[in-house]
Image 1: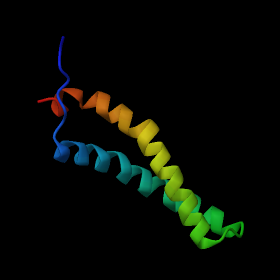
Image 2 (image 1 turned 180 degrees about the vertical axis):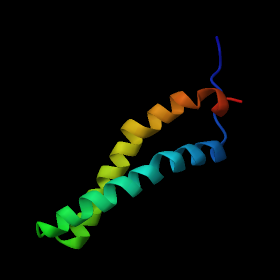
Image 3 (image 1 turned 30 degrees about the horizontal axis):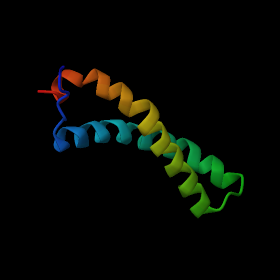
Length: 75
């Protein structure tokens, strides 16, 4: 039976950073003005966008990056 090696925390932090930065810089400037323009409360807008970003990061970006960087993570 093979034992899966747990990646170092600093490597996971880099993967999270690589996943979240492009999402923040692409989604926030596009969606925030639209949501504010339609009259959504600024605090509700932020909460909605943060929820969207975290969801995309956890279920889309991070799994893709974990597969791409699997060899590096397990070194």
